[in-house]
Length: 333
Image (cartoon, rainbow, N blue to C red):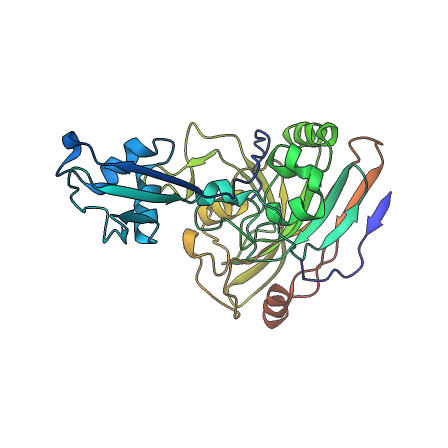
């Protein structure tokens, strides 16, 4: 067994087991495109005319180009998207790529790599770092860092990312470096062969052992949230009490499935939201500004060699300080 339990540096949605297609290549070049306003477009809005000039782009993106000064009407920047056109006007457009198309680019980022070989790597993600580019976070993600560290990641589904951590959740995650290992890891996660344990601080007195078996799916009322609802995907979390003081429980959570926000939703459903988890009703306490959740242990058989691997990551400074401030002893595995 390879054991990695030394202190780890802090440079560098819960688990999501879906895989995806290959990463698109960056599209950085801006194209210049021009046209004359035909008579049948006289009096029409500028943004509507742009859609027929560049139908491959969304109207929203074209409107953003107008706001950025990339659209000239008769040589002068257009004032807004609602400008009414006149027949015969010359329109020049600098078609900048969308943020989405620019997202999958290599960025030299400080990834804290705990373990790496030719098939996979294990990272210790810092809180506040997004794993996969999405609206509002098109750069500075784990994926961007992987593309710089390992250029061949551009040929892999999600750059080799086989499960994710929420932006404000810290800790361990495994990434495949070859298609063979990515495929094997996805299958292992689906078969519950990757063991994951988290440390957390929750409001209220959690029972000594709380076994939560409750289906999860997206909350129909608030799409950014998950909820315990019939018809959801089967989900199970075992919660072990490590300590209790001043209406706060220190817990160790063992995942038996890996749904989005699973631990956060399960504990909130039982009346024990995580500290500082505003999305699920957890008030701030002990100085924490983000949800009190850390992926502390990861163990699995190497997908190629079969060797048993286990990795432990100590809590980052903010959670460690809150843990100590609450009077809880250092977790013992």
